[in-house]
Amino acid sequence: MQTQTIRIAVAPGVEIAADVAGRDGAPTVVLGHGGGQTRHSWDKCEVQLAESGFQAINYDLRGHGDSDWSHDGDYGIETRACDLMAVAAHGARPLALVGASLGGMTALAAASLGLPVDALVLVDIVPKMAPGGVARIRSFMTASPDGFASIEEAADAISAYYPERPRPKDLSGLNKNLRLRGDGRYHWHWDQRMMSDARADPRHMLDLLDAADWTDRVPTLLVRGMKSDIVDDDGVADLRRRIPALEIADISGAGHMVAGDKNDEFNAAVIEFLTRVMPR
Image 1: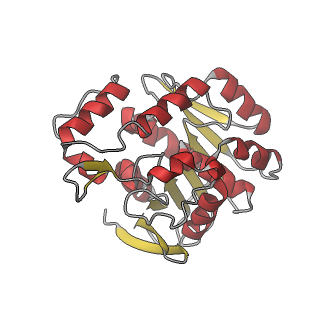
Image 2: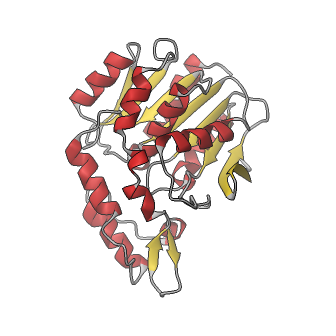
């Protein structure tokens, strides 16, 4: 399955990188990765969606991967939602948004700010997140401001943060998340300023969702990693109160990085849901 990489202007001097797979005019699924990741975390899902009859648009969030960084450090949830609206405009209706963690919060915000959405998939994210898990993610993402001496050192940091996942023997995939800078060290390829932008506070999402008018009519699936430290029972109950018809797919043995932990099981759950609620 061939993909086409495009760049989408979302603001003066800011472009979003996206891969597109599948037939033009087919029902569109926009894939948004989690914070600190890139669109390549969705590579297999993108291909399987296209093979199932959808058009997949798989994009790098602002400040990540091959997308541009904000000149003024603006990484607010509303700004990200506007980026997603511009990306979705390159697809067709019906339209589904699939978002993991930060990508899921962005999808919720875009729908709440008026993007017409026909289905929504949230991957291990709820507006009311478990504080301990959030603190752990923030600690990891801000822990190495001076970078790493080698890719192996970066892999060690990931293993320490996520010991449940076996350390890969082939580390070449990390090149998509790291950049060798002029100081001779490897740095995560995301803009550290996003971690201190008050406009990105997830509590803003609660206000947006409370004012939204789509929650009683858009089919919504929460894919939950049963070993997640971000989504707990209180968070699920809160989301179900806000989205009464919420469906839940529990993925056993998966943590917060559901798609990476149980990729085939995750892809099957998402495609089954989208095929059922948003026929091709």
